[in-house]
Length: 174
Image 1 (cartoon, rainbow, N blue to C red):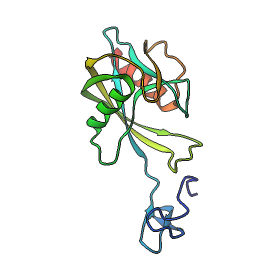
Image 2: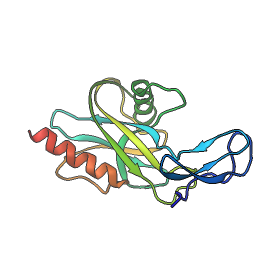
Image 3: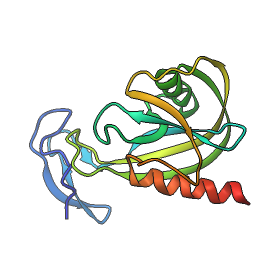
Image 4: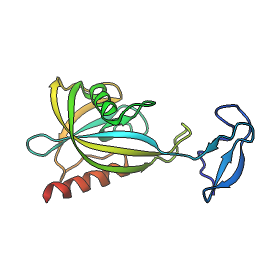
């Protein structure tokens, strides 16, 4: 089966793509320029910012998907952006805070159903971060910021983040 988010036309030359099996999967192939639609995940970063009581800082989403629900502070990397730099940028944009990532935590794969952007998977890179400066103020695509106990979380916007926070709680209990 071909993923419903594949291209129908080549994003480089506009030629109609032909379905062929490449690397054991049906993929759209451009017979003109050779583009192969691999339907790759978009890279994203997430900041695990914990206070002294081991509560996590979450942002309330201002946009769809998940508008009005909570999620981990972070976002998508820009073209050719190094993950640590993208993480610092995203945190600054959403919270007004300067952070220092100090430890890698995990990778997480997310699936987003019903998006129209032409992709529906992300690969999330998660880091523990400490606040080094700034005044906490929600901005960009966040309407509120709040620390939550890992034992009493709000309604989360995304299923993969529930798994991340469960894993984080288990990790911190060791």
